[in-house]
Image (cartoon, helix red, strand yellow):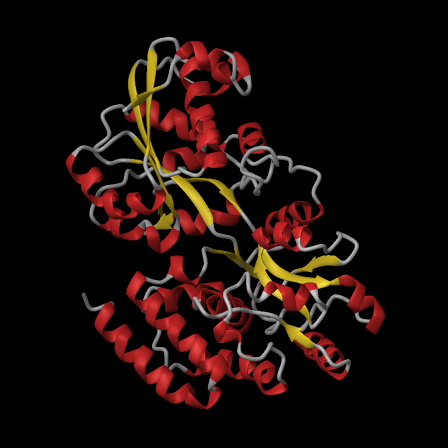
Length: 417
């Protein structure tokens, strides 16, 4: 167990005693936090958060233990059951559901009643009308594209599916592919399905499918695949994408052989490192398909939770309120910290073109909801089988009926347990 020293914290405090006066009751005892922010930059952020909170409360000692992210996935249930800390890191949506259902995470709906600016992700932290955690960072997904090629071809960012298809045909006619993608590790196909299903049937339907409440053979699911097949039949995607990782697919866009990439914002750094300037790259929100459904986005969200067996729930709640405040979220997501997006809509974002576009999109134009991504929203086994089927569909679209039947059989088995 690593204890945070007050002397160290005094030199690194984020916002000083004013924050303590504004947000914190008189806390005492020990606050135990287990975090999986084990990579260097996130670890530094977590250590600073713990140190700052410790320094704000004279009679409280913050004990922080950082566990390797992959190891934490196999340890979390035992830790929450046998020797629960007060606060843990985890993920929203389906990833937290098993622990909520097992009674291992605390209902923190009272915290949500006291804060503003988190509406876009509230659904991802809500089960049966109650909230079981708070978000501290997320990042946008969307279409990153070669702005210089769009300009060459006289194309504009599409707002509708018809415009997306028309742009794609113009790109194909120029001898390029519309989209690069690497589906060797499957998950990138999940991003395409998420957007196509949310744009075709809406966020609520997509999440109902993730919860196993809708058959994969439902006609509405078939319509999503029908929309997807329009692109596949056009030849929109690079050839042999099943042989590439997402990084190995990046050169197709860098070299101008493909024009766009549906991806998370983490792809911007390698695009820049590969030689593309910000004048050559731009970003647009995945266009509307069904005008009757509100726009929803993929924005994987990392979270803090209070353990149901916590010994110092008062301090744990105060820590969550501190982390979710606008100024703290601004600082921990800065370019020299996590380099991602604050979830609190009242926070500010580093002066980066793509972070600013993502923040505006998620804060102002994602009224349909915020999904966590296919492999977070669906149960692990269903996600694995689902992504295999999605990749197969992209390569062999005529196999759709067999794919849907297999996924439906899996749904009936997996959700019955």
